Each structure stands twice: as C-alpha cells, then as structure tokens.
Length: 447
Image 1 (cartoon, one colour):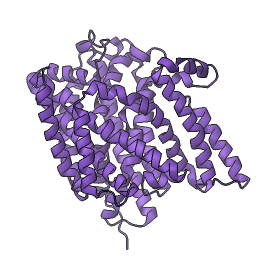
Image 2 (cartoon, one colour):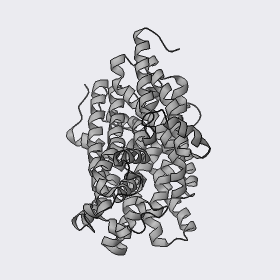
Image 3 (tube, helix red, strand yellow):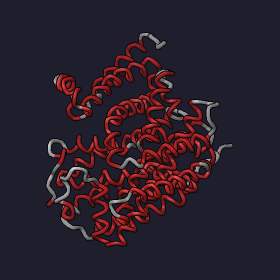
Image 4 (cartoon, one colour):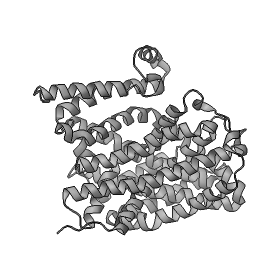
C-alpha cells in the first residue's frame, strides 16, 4: 500500500526543489530590480513574482495535475516533432549553453574575483575546474540528490544568505522613499518586473525539474498517480513560498542600499551581483567578501547539480542507446566548463533573445497542462495554441534582437496588443486556444 509523505519528507522535498530553482540569477536580478525600481518597488516586485514565482509554481502544478512524467511527456501532447525540438532547446538553454555556465561564471565574478583582482584569467580557470568537479561528483549520484541538496547545500546557503539579508534590513543605508525610479521602471514597473522574471530562467526550469521531484517522491514510496500529483503540488507550494519571501527581502535590500551604488547604477554592465558585492563589503568588510563567496558558490553549485542531473536524464530518454547517464553528465559538465570561461556578461547577453523566444512557449504549455483535463488534453487544442504562440514568440525574438529586424518590430507594434510591453504572445495564444477548442468541439483532429 502506498504511503503518504510525512510533513518532514514534504518539507525536505520542498527544500530540495527550492535549492534546485534558486541559483545566482535569483539573487542578482531581484537585487538590481530593487535598486532601479525605487519607490515603484511594490509594482515591480509584483511583476517579478508572477514570472519568477507564480509561473514556476504553475509549472510544477501542471506536471502534477496533467500527471506528466516530465517535459517529454507534456510537450509530446503537441506533436512528436515539437517534443524533440522544444525539449532539446529548453534543456540546452537551462543547461550547458547558458544556465549552468552562468552558475560558475556568476560564482567567480561575484564571489571570487573581488578576492583575487581583475586580472584573473588563470584563477577563473582553476575555480571553474574545481566548481564543475564538485558538480559532477554530486550529479553522478542522482539518487542522493535529496540528501546533497535538500539536507546539506540548501541549508548552508540559506544560513549564509540570511546573515547578509538580516544585517542589511536591520541597518538600511536609506529608506525606500528616497530611492528614485530608474531604468525601464519609469514607464511601467509591473511589466518591467514581469520581464525581469524571465532572466531567472525559472519558468523554463519548472518544466525541467518536474521529473526530479516526481522521481524523488516515488523513491520515498508514493507511486499512486493521484498521490504523486498531490505531493508534487504541495512540494511546489513549499518551495515557491520560500522563494517569494527571499525575493521580496532581496529586492528591499537592493532598494534600501541604493546609496552605496547610486553613482554606479547607470554604468553599463553594472549588475545585481556588483550591488551584492558592495552591500556585503559595507556591512562585513573583507569578511563580507568571504561570506559572499561562500553564499554565491553554494547557491550556484546546488542549481548546477540539479541542471546537470535533469539534462542528463532527459537526453538519456530522448536518445536511448546513444550514451549512458554518466557519459551524458560528463558531456554536459565539460561543455558548461568551457562556455563558463567566456565571462558572465557575455553569457547574459547571448541568453536574452533565447529567453524571450522560449518563455512564452513554456508559459502556454504550462497552462495547457493545467487546463488539459477540461478539454481531454486534445492534441488539436495543444497544436493550435502552440502554433499561434510560436508565431508570436518569433515576433518577440525580433523585438529583442532589433537591428535589421526593427522594421518588422515597428510594423508589429502597430497592431499586436501588448507587444511593446513584451507580452505580444498573450492574445495570439488565447486566439489559438479558443480556435483549438472550437475545432475539438466539431470533432476535428490533429494528424
């Protein structure tokens, strides 16, 4: 007879899920949001929480409610071709091309470079080799990921982060009312925060980490589909509640520490990581740099472990007989090691267009999974909704790239609702969904 998860087990899985989600981007993007949003922080934070907490939670819920075994199963409801293309694109984005290298690059840039100086090419190579050696060690033991992340790395990270946030909140440099609104937050703080949430990669990661949560729950003895679904949703609520709390605290610290970096905030290339380093040094001096190094490294390492594990298990399923799990783990770790050394700013710049293309598709797929029982998960509905969303995502990509695409962008902005806010995919997705429902009601089927 299947057992139910105890409160302790549920809390532990929630902690593991939080640890997998919460990487370096989850620290630096709320920090810079608070610094730039200023008095508009409530609206900006609300937008961030939608895409960086609400959508990831819906992603976990979607996996549970639709009883999907992972992204392959969920995306396969659209078509086999879409399943392979979208799954590969998503996992490569949150894996060896961007997210995993960003973990190591951020750890070094924020936590280590202040200790070794700017001329740090050799130290960076040494650090990334050590970083990914540790990541591979844990990733080669996927059955132990609940212990390694949920019991050890995540609590240690939260302890370091808590020390810094409490110190900054208790003794703020300035009040929120003194911070001006800057950057893209003047014209629409909510929408700017909404789009900032894309950069955390969590909307995509929720589709990737679902398989880890589901398998962990089954390892604890829960195998009945309904019980697995319920436990998955509960674990998602635990992890996202904790994430929302830390987002709010980090953004508030970013705003209330504005006086430390007011002159540098408008400098090109200034990031939340730079703000974090200055705050740490202000409150703790050189000791603060050591705390920051430990905090960021633990934060990024646990996320990298989860991403290598998820990517390896998924590609093992996508391409059976090609490589076994340990070899996939080595491939993804090695590729991430090489890419991480091109630098944090380059990784962030290259990832932005890809995120604006993939995130709308991920959000629509998540919503289809949630409401799928309503229309029997009919393929025609999935196909129509994702088809119109794909066309809109291409237009979003053009908007971010600009340059030669600017004429297309200007033309699209004249007729597509919400396009200038980065939400041009909403109406097309809704129309595609409605059209799919009508076709399904008439008995039309996808080939």
